[in-house]
Image (cartoon, rainbow over all chains, first blue to last red; front, top):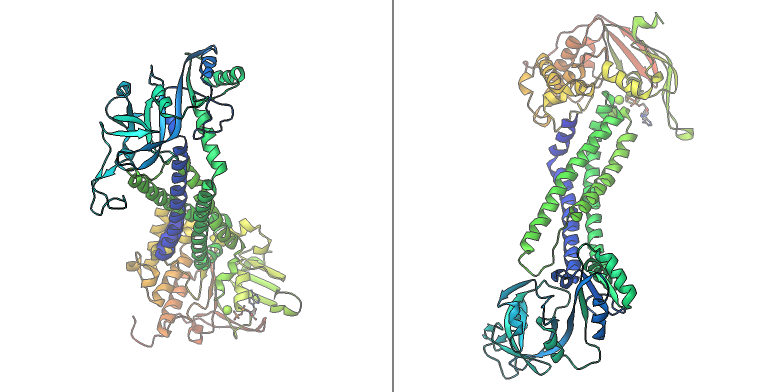
Length: 393
Length: 245
Ligand SMILES: Nc1ncnc2c1ncn2[C@@H]1O[C@H](COP(=O)(O)OP(=O)(O)O)[C@@H](O)[C@H]1O
Ligand SMILES: [Mg+2]
């Protein structure tokens, strides 16, 4: 009877299409929105993820997440280095400063200062030049996307100082100069960085030079990057650093989660995506449930005939369940497939899209729930169905 | 009990009340009915007199309110639900006024349904169904969907389905009323020819006087009671008006 159940489902093309449409749409919306959500969330901690060498991040105890750092005194570095099992610890400067381009326009930029001796914490990938070039006089490395866009200049300007009509955009290139807080900086390389929630251009330089760009303050060290000795558990070590230095030490993973959770708690992002996912779910239930119910209603007289001719209620329920399951599986496949296609399309763009294995699993659970809800009403109908209806017009 | 076995169907004082209180409908008010083995019995009477209600009870798809009822030696109402379903599947064949063929299935698949419900393997069931379609004269339509068949052809498929599992008791509710006169003759002739054997019984509800001659016994009902029984020598020849289609 399984084959008969499937034929009944597929045989009614219009209804079958409607059921599939509902489930596909729900699976697509849930998968796609969740993937964008995860994509956005993983952007929040991209700076931490990009910096792979250290396994412990030490900050001022007041710091909650990576994008808002509270400077520490330079003596903090020695305190961290003094903790047993710390293999190495280096300072890092990270702050938003004011840059001025050659044409006189101002731009906020994120200046990242790397330990002069080791240059630990540099960009994940160089596009032009070499990280070592930072040692040249006034050397800085720009992120290549900003060099092409926000830091670019135009071939011509109008009287108001806006780009002229047919002006060409000229990317900032190696050898160009800019001013950061009135100090000269020379571009010695271009790098790639993963996009973060901080939209400003990223400029890498040495720690000492970064301090020379920065306004003079008593405390200037933003971060201490540390590495646990071989065989030492970073989590235990960071707990120990926190306990002995009265600083805040977090493993890279903890730091990432701190950042995600901060954004989750303090922005509308989760609610907005939650609503989109919920909508997808509800639309799926509405369309798929409604059409599936109609499908069952249309077939009720045949189910009645089957009951009269010796089909048990249990057998009919299995038929309905199989029909729901089949529609669910195909709709799910189509929906997740479309979402994946969307992801592949979005791959080359600025769009955040990240489909971890959890997402198809969550969509599967949602689709299963949609099918269960849709078929439940139909099943109740079938259970209540009196075989005597077969003789009634 | 031995006496009950002489008849395929035997009822005593069967009543059926739908609903309760002021809205109660007394559809059957004490039915006395005997259907001997090997007979084709027609139930006739005005609309609303309880014919459909009665065969529903006989076929074990509806519970009576009072009275006694033996069908093929058992009281279907005394069987457990699952046993009763199985009993119906094995012993009862159904023919409906509106055919009730599943539109998504081919003729052969529709005919195979009772066997599939009994758990027969698909291949065997389809083979038996095709043989049955041949007996009702439409073997060539085995791969065709019901919607592409004429009413007469659809009812022939339905007859094949009602008989494919060799039931001992066949109930038909107005099997010819959706058909023209000649198709009614053909369908009734097939039913009488294929279904009638000494170890079987057929109850046909109808108000189509043109097929009365097929019956061994005509039970006239009125207002929930049996108003009269006439036995006759059945004439199983087809009374066709036009040339045979
Ligand atoms: N399920 C039901 N609920 C209430 N009344 C019913 C139901 N089925 C039949 N009846 C009533 O029982 C009476 C007999 O109906 P039925 O057996 O269908 O008559 P027939 O088949 O002879 O036309 C009618 O008055 C009908 O309205
Ligand atoms: Mg009737």
